[in-house]
Length: 508
Picture 1: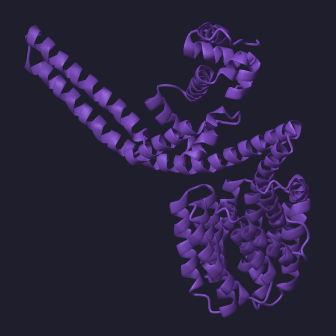
Picture 2: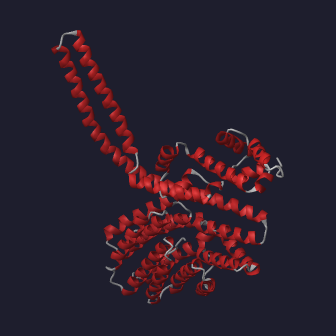
Picture 3: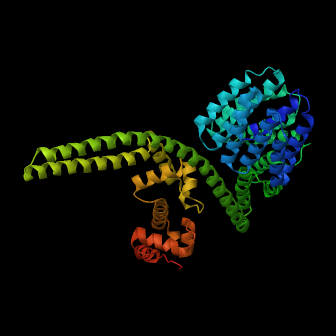
């Protein structure tokens, strides 16, 4: 579940009583609500121009947050966080509690999307602390409403839907005290309520909240929020197997998906649309949308993983610095051993004794070298508790049969496991004794072998169809992987099964 909570915070500036903000806010609002939906590149250029033209810290920080918001919609988490961090530095100097709370809320959302939940809840708390220091009661209420809303999204991600509903209702109380752009804030909450009730299986209640959200947004042009709402309504009608109404909202959602640069929205819409075309039994349309979803998922995974790897690399570099300091001590110890060896040489003249001592010294140095090597490896190893968490995630992954999807990559799996590609590779190599590709291939082949053995209809599939079902991009790669795992070709393996079941036949 993706939130647009603190993305909307820029609208708070409309409620702040400061001079010469009107023109700035008009450009800002139009850029985010309208231009970004129609022309993402143009919106980014406007955001950069706003920053260049700004002199006061308030406007500079606001412009940076506009860029950060646009970038996060495009899936570029690293750049989004970089812009937000730069804005945070400006606000720290100006002691602007409103904007600092806004930035903390934005960062809470980003870390939640990355499934880094400890960091996310930490920023929610920090945002709340800043909000309590705001003197303007109207602004304070809106900020607290958004923080509570983000907390609700956090609970939705944890699948605590009833708790999320209570938080959203609390957020609504805060928003009703706001006189400016109240409809947009309330609509975003109604959308979250609708999603929560949908997940609880209360479809009529969910539809009611989506309808309220659309009514609140009727004066606004098509935008990402409407896209999420159309998508949610179409999902309800698909559950109700109402093809006519499902198609109406699938078409509305896809119209927005085709124009927006908001990757998470695109992914959700393409995913729901696939369910509709399964209902309609339109395999061609289903396949087209599956390819689109896979492509978007890969881009999102790569960009998220870039950020996670960047953060983990910083941590590893810090640990390596500590290791290098320890290495100096180890080398000093080795140097002492060498000096002792030279003293032995001059003190003991007998050849036999000399050879014995030199042998001992050589063994000691070899032992030290091995220890150094082991220390180098250990410093790169993962903490036991982190390793255990990754292993549990891999176990869940193996039981889910997700590995038959064609878009599975090391980066995508690392996001699923809440880690980075380096750590994941270490765990797979260490515990599975395989690299990533061979690990996935092994899972796919074992899955297919089980299906062939237990479900007779699989004996009738062509080899190319079996390759497709197992997630292989080509028939040749499938045959190669199958032979490596089972020591025979798929055809021979199927024949051996057919010999045990003479009535079955394979169409190769």
